[in-house]
Image (cartoon, rainbow, N blue to C red; front, side):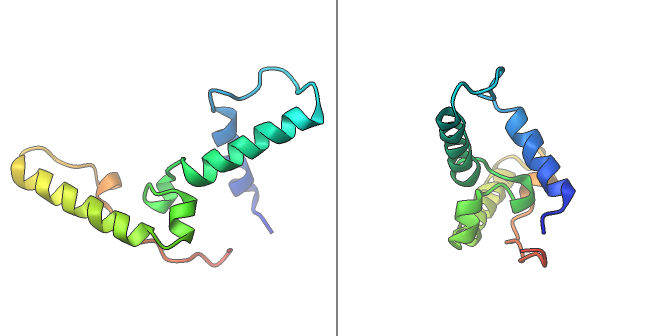
Length: 103
């Protein structure tokens, strides 16, 4: 069962998309095409903050750990080159996510 907070978060994400429709769809097929495009973007292009800024597709394919390790190396190199410039802790968290109990 999906909690209301998850569906509200998803609705907010899609509502602020630049291609969010200003008017109702003329045909059901148009709505289906838009949702199909949205689902592809959401799963394969949108980097989720809750997933350490990887896509759900990367996460489910097990690609998050190598990507996060690569990101860590980039941040460490940047810190060595520019020690006085801080890196946001939001982006510096390179630990792969555990699986949540609601999945």
